[in-house]
Amino acid sequence: MFASSHAAVRRGSAALTVGCLLILSVAALRLLFDADEQQTRFLGRPVGTACWFKARFGVPCPNCGMTRSAILASRGEILRAARIAPGGPALVICLLTVGAGVASLGAIQRWGRASQVLRAQSAMRVVVIACGSVAASVWIGGWMVEVARCLKQR
Amino acid sequence: MFCSKCGHQLDAAVAFCTACGAPTAGGSATGPAVPPYVPPPPSAQSYDPAPPYPPPPPYAPAQPYPPAPPYAPALPYASWGDRALGYIIDSLFVLGVMILLYAVLGGFFLATVGFSRSDSFGGGMCCLGLILFPVSTLLVGLYNRVYLVSQRGYSIGQGVMKLKVIDAHGRLLSQGTALIRLVVHAAFGLVPLLPVLDLLWPLWDDPYRQTLHDKAVNCYVIYNRDVR
Image (tube, rainbow over all chains, first blue to last red; front, side, top):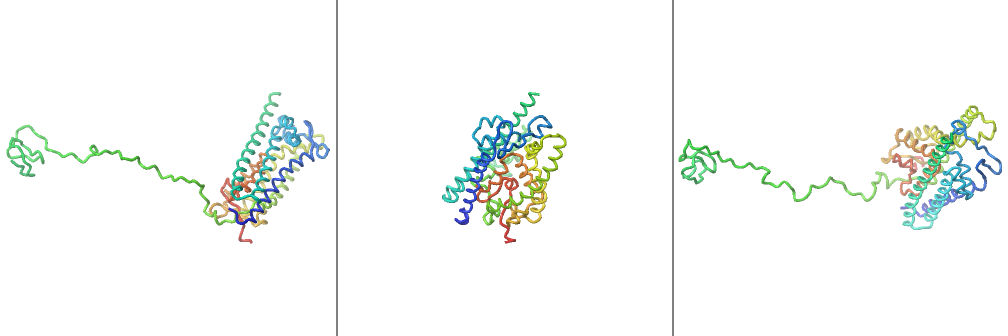
């Protein structure tokens, strides 16, 4: 399967690094940002929360609230985050899952046997398709619910 | 007596031979007409048409493995790291166009909506970011990933990493195929997380190491031996 063990080690190292970076990105979100229902803060400094789409059409855009929601989700406040935008927790959970999966795959590629690598790769395909589908569905579904709620309140 | 034509033995009273139908000398010519004997044609009535076995189905061989592309075994597929570096280089151009578009469109939005607070402009990125990445990818990609890839086989970033994009027959992509590949790639940018998964896919796609937008048009990224 592999041209050489050196190539397998290189591939494993790359995957291990990428997986760790994905997990660290969630950690960075938690460390650098802070948020509540109204506002996002970067290193303690408030950043804007107004959305042109919402100001123009009166309904939120698909990404409205995603930053606040993802920051809260990275801090473990899943329910609070889901109330702002359900896509935020889904994004963070999928990012962590995929990150852990890629890091595990890298470790297996680097130190495991060829048969284990094949099994891990098959598992990763399933995990990634599931994560992508769930995250996309929750993201777009949550936005549609929010739009319906805004239109009903008019 | 015997028939004069076929020699069949006959009764004396019959007017026609029962074997060949020829008139006999001893029979009455005015008697009831006996139709000549006509041997049954070889028809299908006596033959059972039903074959002992059902007819064989159309040939459809079971394929336990997906068919491999013609050049699969010999191609030096690009490693994920080299592909990612090429992608990052290409993304720098996309980032430049994104910043330009953000400044232009952001200024336009700022003027039309009339935000009073300066920091509100930054918050407007949530909806702009949703469309700017795919739009910028398309704009840059029309030259970088359609024209260049179809003409010489690699984008700017792939050229730096000495990679090349080919189809399943080992040829350069046509402009139409490269455009479809670009549109699929840009469409992934509309959904959060999907571009990341697309970029990561070669990590677990042995032996071809394709991204999802490669799979959409069945193309492969290999090392470019011509420039090595």
